[in-house]
Length: 396
Image (cartoon, rainbow, N blue to C red; front, side, top):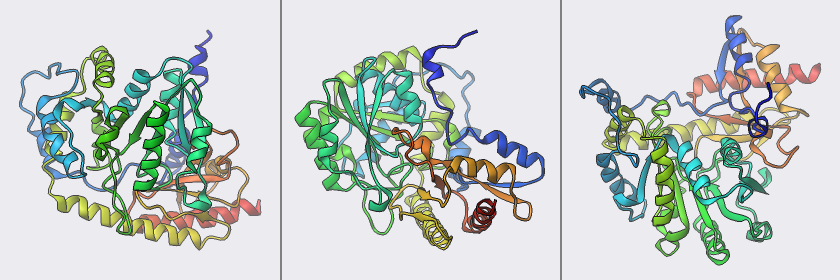
C-alpha cells in the first residue's frame, strides 16, 4: 500500500537512523560510545527522582491543556534571572521543546509558508516543518567562521511574501555557537521591519563557556509581540526522558492559536510536570558544576580532535555539541564503517552524520556532529577509536 507523500518526504533522523548498526555491534560484544545523541551521563537532580517516587495522587488524571498552574507560576522567577519579565499567562507547558517548536510552526504558518533558518540547524526541525507543510529556507553559516550568524543581508535577501518567521537556536545545536547581543538585535530589527516572527530555541541557555554570557530573546520587551521562545527541562536538569518543555510568548494571538493545538492533544504529562516543578528547586551549585564539567569536556574534545590528522572543528561557545570536518568524502559511510566494520580492542564510537543538519543538499557531507555528553575518560577512549578508525578507513 502507498504511504502519504508527506511521510515519504521525511528524512530518517541522522541522530538515530544508524541505531540498528549500533545494536548489531553491541550484540557482537562491542562497546559503543554514544556521541551521536545529546543524552548526558550527568545525574538528574535527586529531588526530581524523589518527586517521581513520591507521587501520591490516586488517579493520574487529565491536567490543564496549557500546563499545571503551579509549574507555570514557578517559571517566571526562573526567566527573570535572565532578564526576562515573563508572567504565568505568557507560558504554555509543552511535551518537550519539540512540541513547542511544532506548535509555533503550525500557529504561524499555512502550508507552503516559509521559515528561514541558519544551517547547520537542529535536524528535527526539518521533520516538524515537513509535518506542518512549511518550507525551510537556509542561510549557511561556516565552520571557518565559528558558525557565527551570517550577514543580515543574507537573511533579508531570502524573505519573500510567504516568509512567516526566522528561527534560531542559541546556544546552538549542533554548532555550539552562542548568538551575541549584536546578532540578536540585528535579527530582531529585521523581523520587526519585515513584519515577521522570531522563534528562538533556548534550551541550552545555562551552558555557555569562556565567560561568555547568555542573552535571552525574551529580554527585549520592545520586540515582545513578535518573539516566541522555546524551552525544555531535558538538558538543563539531565531529564531528557521526562519530555517537559515550554512555549513562551507575550503575543496573545500566538498563545491563543497554540492553545487550540494544546487542547487537541489534551494536556502535557502529569507526573513529569511534578518532576519539572521539583527541578526548579535545584540549588544553583548543581548547574554551575554541570556547566564547568561540560566546559572541561569541550576543552578535552577540541584538543583531541585537532590532534587527529585532517580533522578540523570550531571551538563551541555553548551547548554540548560541535561539528567536525573529517578527511573523508562521505561521513555517513564512515559512521556506518565505525559500527559495522571497525573496533579497537572491542570498542567503537557512534557519531551523527552532519549532512542531515543542513537544508542545502550536499552540504555537511564530510562532517559529523559530536555530542560531548560523556565523561573525559570515555571521551578519550572514543577519540582513540575515531583516530584509529580514520586511519583504517583511509587505508582501505
